[in-house]
Length: 314
Image (cartoon, rainbow, N blue to C red; front, side, top):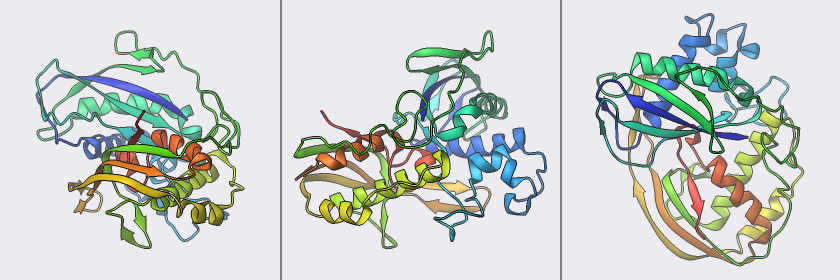
């Protein structure tokens, strides 16, 4: 997995919502299909090209027909995460800049040029209320500029990720040495964007540690299977049972409601979740690699919008 930072500059006045994840993700999906789809008047499920289509892989992500997991689901986890700026500013004047993160997983990293071109096209189409246009100024990775709007040359070669969680390094597997244990008995997490964790078909309001671990194990294992070609050999039942012994030390969270409009479904969807700080105490060592990985992968529903972003407090 590789994380990039994209910086844009407003050409027109931009009117954006306080939480910008839906705006960027929705606009990206529309522009991406317009850019790469060869049969635009068909739904992906009815398209003969879906198993070889970049749009289908990135944005619809269907499970393979021979999938051993999630066979009853229409879609596997997306191989990308858009991390909108956390600022709540809503109006940007021409010349104002803002940056957002883009995490690419598995072979999606090989499609980076498509992502860059699509975000450039989205700037020409316009975003937000009034469809204000912007220019993509540059793209950086690990603090190094790999693309800018002046020379329009991409200085980045996506490494082909090795299979498995112990890949490590830039472009490695979903995790590096994820089975390693660490000695610690307390951890505090700050949830920065609305976090929607569903357990037994119910949204979690008051987070318990086992809720977090259940959701992380599901996300990490499905990403590993669908985007890195490895089914995790973990004692899921045992991990969850031991997670139930870890207790909440302090919880200071609140529910943050927001809505997004889905043009494809022509419906407004509630996407609220909890934000704030939760501290846990107990035998945490074996869980820390999953928690640290969740800082990059996010947790819960709506991760491609940037939901479920948290940080481990020092």
